[in-house]
Length: 286
Image (cartoon, rainbow, N blue to C red):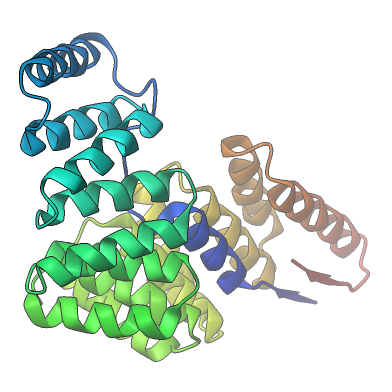
C-alpha cells in the first residue's frame, strides 16, 4: 500500500495565498479598546489635516490607521496623497505595498516595495518584504536574489532565513530549504512556520520520520495549522497507521471544513483504512 502526497502544492497555496506575506489587522479584528484607539487616532489625524492638508507625515499616519482598521481603500488613498507630498519617504511605499498586497493586487504591491527598496537600499525590512511579495507573485529567482541581499543586511533575523527557505523549497531546492529553516529555528525556536516548512522539505525528500517530527513540533506551537495536520495524516497513512491518519485528517477538516482537498483526503484515508482492514491491498494518492 502506498500513500503519496505533494507537500509543495500545499506550500504553493500557502505562499500565494498570504503565508509569506506579513500579517495585517483585518477589518473587524480590532475590538474593544483597540478598536476605539484606532478610531480615535483616525479622528485626530483627520482633524489635523483639515488644518494642514499638506502634512505628508500625518497623511502617512492616517493611512496606517485606516489600514489597521481594515479600511484598505481609504488607506491607499491616504498613502497616495502622502507619496505626492513626501516622495522620498520609503514608509509611504511600504504602506502602499502592504495595502495592495492585502487587496490581492500583487504586482502593484511589488512595484511599491521596489520603490521603498530603492529609497532605502540598506534597510532589511524593505528588502525582506519585497522578497516576500516577489515570492507571492511567482517571481522566485528575483525573490531569491532579494532574500540574499536582505540576509546580508541582517543575518540574525529568523524570518529572513525562514522565508528564504520556503522560497527555495518552491524552486525545488529542498536541501537549501532545510538548511535555511534550521538556521531560522536556531535563531527562534518557537516559530511554528519554520518547523512546517522543514517538515515539507523532508517530506519532499521522502524522509517521513523527519517530516513527522517537524510537523508535530509545528502543531504543538500552532494548533490551528490545518495544512500541518493534513500532511501528518499523509505520513501516518504511509506508515499504515490509519487510526492516527484519520484523526489528523479529521482535525484538518474541522479547522477548515470548506477546504475540499482536506475533505477528499479524509474520505480517501477512511476508504483505504476500510479496505486494508478487510485484507485487501490498495493505493491511495492525495
